[in-house]
Image 1 (cartoon, rainbow, N blue to C red):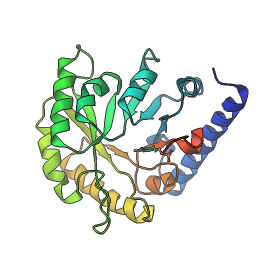
Image 2: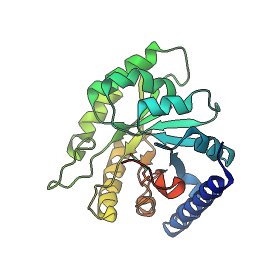
Image 3: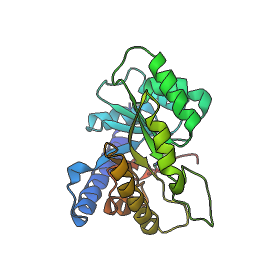
Amino acid sequence: MVNQERKTEISNGLEIANSRINAAARSANRNPSDISLIVVTKTFPRSDVDFLYELGVRDFGENRDQEGAVKAENFHRDARWHFQGQIQGNKIKSIVKWADVIHSLAEIDHAKTISDRYQMGEAVLPAKYPVLIQVSLDSEKRIERNGVEPKSLTEFADAIAKISGLEIKGLMAVAPIAQNPDIAFAKMAEIFSDFKEKFPMATWLSAGMSGDFESAIMHGATHIRIGSSILGNRSYL
Ligand SMILES: *Cc1c(COP(=O)(O)O)cnc(C)c1O
């Protein structure tokens, strides 16, 4: 159970985030309903997730298998769980059981394992597991290596497209720390536009966090992942 003070904090945070999303969409000449908010609940308790559900939230983001698995267990069936953290190969078997979509795919070996593990599971829908390819927006000077390098993206996606149990939903990106998000997301928009020519079914662009989601919306993000500006500061990280 969440106390009244926490309820007020969360509902205010959600309301403010939604109005900022709407304002950013309007100034980008976009329809706010084309932008999905994923509330990133990592490190926050299941009671917060329950309350967010009461407020109408259906999309939840988690970074760790163990934590996500516990929160998603026996949760409402119409909720969607988004895995967006770094993938560990030995956790994939578990991740595909509770997560409805993986945003952070960046290795071929992981893609094969996701497909195998998913197809080995019970007969569940959808037939193909939805994944987003994480693209690196790092400048050449400062490589943090979070994602596939843009120059290798087509080759990577071609290989993923050949794996029978996967569906490429789109791209995901994180703006590098210590870089202007507008510059990073402008680059991302270009990459996404080229990508869609070759993969027109890949309609999702997952980008934007608490500190930079307005910029991401300006540059075409369809799915934004917001944690701390709704739920408050995380106690670790
Ligand atoms: C934690 C995290 C978020 C949310 O970050 P906030 O700054 O709390 O909004 C979004 N995306 C990824 C990949 C994350 O790890």
